[in-house]
Length: 224
Ligand code: AMP
View (cartoon, rainbow, N blue to C red):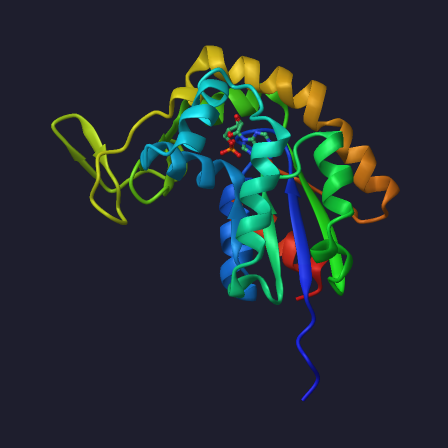
């Protein structure tokens, strides 16, 4: 039997483009772990850890959490056994400094193949999508009142299909914060698109398409 290849897949794109949805779908299809730095940080906040408390001050304003915190949580996550055959990164790296350090990690250099997938979406669509987003504070499931509506509403509150918790609007999904996240994206994160282009691993898909169409384009890029 030929040994299994290890694959690194990085999702890029503005907030609300569908990175999380696609990263989870691809993770399931390829049996790879989905590493969302945003989810790890939100879990740390829910657990009341010191790291969570430090990160929350930045997250609530839509600012980036300092790189040293991000690398500490990511390197710890990559040591877990489910990362042996690669991983799917959602929301990391998020600026040029992180991208450079990321490409120098042994873990990345040892991978058999690497893909950066940009899910592109215009700003007006980003705002429309995020303002309709509802999230589960318990299991991190994400819904959208336009195209992925939760099935149940009790006393005016939407309920998570997956675990039954009451859904919330994330603090950083409120309209004012979204605008700040978009400007942080343009200033700090968008430059890494060129960085990955220069590494010759960049692929772009149009995020305005249906979830299924985007997924089939991604699977084609990955040749799976
Ligand atoms: P996300 O769920 O990926 O949109 O992330 C939510 C928030 O977590 C971001 O707005 C940042 O405050 C923080 N965050 C997540 N990933 C990173 C990262 N790689 N670098 C810095 N901050 C991050």
